[in-house]
Length: 442
Image (cartoon, rainbow, N blue to C red; front, side):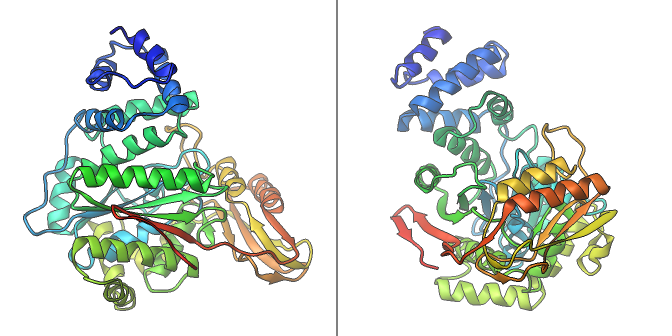
C-alpha cells in the first residue's frame, strides 16, 4: 500500500493493516517519507485515534528504532517515574535520589522544557558543571556505581521519537492520547525497567486539560507497560495551579533541596511522597503503603536522600556544594516583590500564564536550541484558599533586567485571582493500575 493510501485509510477512520506502522517508521527514519506526508498521517491519528493493535505496533516500532539500556542484574529493581509536564514540577529532583537511597536503580531520563512547561534537564543544568548528556554506557555504569542517573534522551534511545516529536511540535499534533502514550512508553521501556510510575497531569497548566483525557492516557500507558512485563502504576494529578512555590530552573532546584530535608511546600512533599510510595512498592522494597510511607519519611529526615543527590551531582560533573550552599546556583540580577492588589481569598493561580512568562523573561525556550537564563522565575508564596490583605507581599519576581521584572509583575497580576472563598480541589485525583481505577480523596 502506498503511503498516501495509508493516510487516506486512517483519515477515513480505519485501522492500518498489520505491519504498516513498522514499515512507515522505518521508511521515515530512512528519509524515504517526507515530513509533510508523515505530518498528514499524524493529524489523521489525532482525529481518528489508533486501534489497540496499531498502538502496540507503533510503540514496538519506536522502541526498536534505537538501543536500550542493559537489563539490571537478577533481583535488582529498576524503577523510574515520568511526568506528563507541568509548571513548578521539580518532583524528579527529590524523587530520584530519595528512591535511589533505598538501593533501587533509578534511570531518570528527562526532557527539556517545551511550551509553557519546565524540563528536569534544564533544572539540573542550572547546577554548575552538571552534565546531562550521558552516553548509554555512562548511564549503565553510573546505575551500577551510584544507583541513580539523571540524564537527557540520547540520540541512541528511540530516535524515532525524537524525529516524530519534533514534527508533532510544529504541526499541532502533540495532544493525542495514543501518540503521547507511544512516545512516553517507548522511551521508558528502553530503560530496561522492572517498574514504572506515571504522573499524568490534568488542568489548565497541563497538556491534557480535561480529566477524562488524562485518565484515558493513564489507562493506556499502564496497559502498554503491563503488556511488556513492566509493572506500571499511574497517578492522575492536578495541574490547575503551580506545584510548590518556585517556578524557574535554579529557583526550583533550591526548593527541591528544601524538600530533600523534609521541608518545603506541603503540596510538593505530598506528591513526591505519593510517587515514592508507588515506586518502593513496585521495587519490592516495601510490602505495604504504610511501610513505604515510613521509609519515605525516614529517607528525607535522615539525610539519606540529600546525600544521594550529592553523589549524583558529583558523578555527573556538578558541584555537590550546592546541596549545602544553594547560593552557588545562578542568581537573578533583579528581584521585586508583588503585593496583593486587594484583600480577599486566593481563588486561583494560573500555571500556564506563569509558565509562559518564564519563557518571555528568558528562562525557557520556544525552540529546543534556544539558550536560557537559569536564574529567572517566580516564587509564589500565596496558596490557594489563603486569605490575604491588600498590599501584602504574596510573590516575588526574579529577572535579568527591569523589563523582565515588569513582564513578571504583569503575569502575576493576570495569573493570581483574589476574591471570595471557593473550594480547592484535591492534588491527587486517581490511582490507575492493571486492576483498574481508584479515586483518591484529599
